[in-house]
Image (cartoon, rainbow, N blue to C red; front, side, top):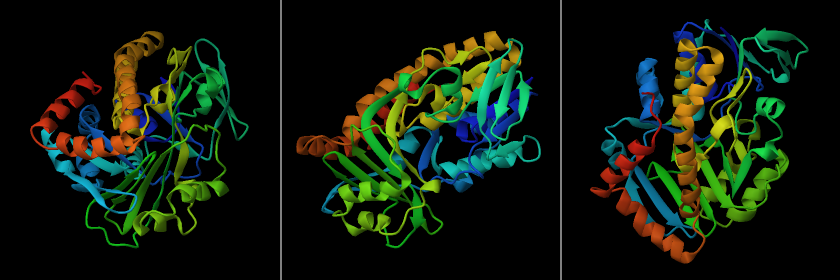
Length: 384
């Protein structure tokens, strides 16, 4: 079976690896001119960890993981609110979880594909014609080819989904926040692995990456959903965070390279059906649950494994239906959890801020952390 994957992010690259192991021949197209180096961290755990083990990649991922142990939270004036140790949660999950930069995860997945799966960078899909037994695909270079299946793994603003299923407005559900992330050289000493600052409607944090750089993560409440031009993004962040402590405000004193960063509205994706004919959605294109869930990457990787397994054992139409039946209930449940988490992640009031300062450290210590780990395991996607 000849399969075209649109998108060289974690979902698309994981799928290519799984398809390759199942004896199928994937081809990847990616609109970026090279592998993206977006500056934010993602979590891989439970089901995602198990997929990485089956692909023989867990040691390579652990070698590139970010060491996050001590996390300190402060208010907008720099006064300490609370701390916790990430290792408590990791230990409660049997050490089967890690934090890794998104581009490092992609590099590990690409390395396993080297010489076996072509990745056509700087290429997008511009037309789809589902002919029943195959799909004729038109590309941005003017060429066209036929594939047995087309997989949209091109993010929550999926171009393939828009071509085959309809405009973004039909499927995007804004949660009322914007987020931004990028990487920059470390200019100030940090006495913890993750430093976060919180205020009403605002949160900003820095991860120590371990290579002389830090990775930022900004989130703020914003009901606007329009795209913000790259040349206006830094100013929009500065308007909210410029008076914060230097550890945060210094991160945007210099120009940010938004071609290697992230800035967008936080939206979930809700699509009535994940496949139409011989085109199927995976990852954020199908079920974006936002970074607030902490499970988006693992769910995408598990979805890739499940889709490949179904395609290897059933005719395409049956395989696509079985893939959705297995994964959609999990994705829906995690999306509902993500909606609830948003209000805690970015408190709406001084009272909410005070509650968070008590609740989070309590949850991250024994014995409550073991209860939280069990809840994570119960809700996480499985490859079984």
